[in-house]
Length: 155
Image (cartoon, rainbow, N blue to C red; front, top):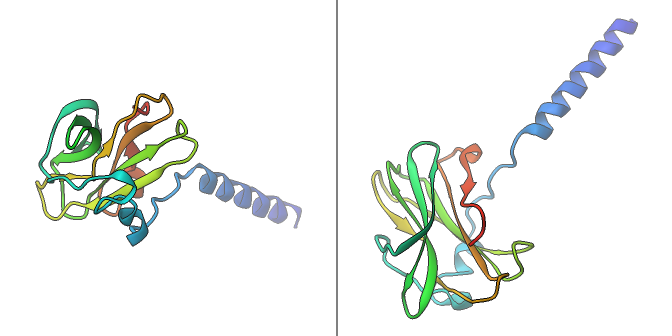
């Protein structure tokens, strides 16, 4: 009987360990997250999905989708996230914007890639010389929260 109790405790500890080690899943797409930055909200401006600028940070998500944090002139100097490459319908891209050095931020998006090989951008936010006013670009492959990745460090 004692070995059964020990086995049960072992299995419970093992299960809890795996659950704790698993990455947190991405939040679902909500109207609030895109509404925080579309149509001029919070100083963002909507931009064309193919717009590029000067690359600041670049990463590849899941070996397929390239996500770039760009800066460029769109009604002043701004930053934005851009996804391209071997994208698939349902892949996601967004930009996080912080005014306090990353302690809290507004998530601009996620924006859904409409079809294979499509490009997609977030809205663009103005830059600021303050060292705590920063951006990062993020992406996730369709229905694969474990592929969620953001450019580092914040820019």
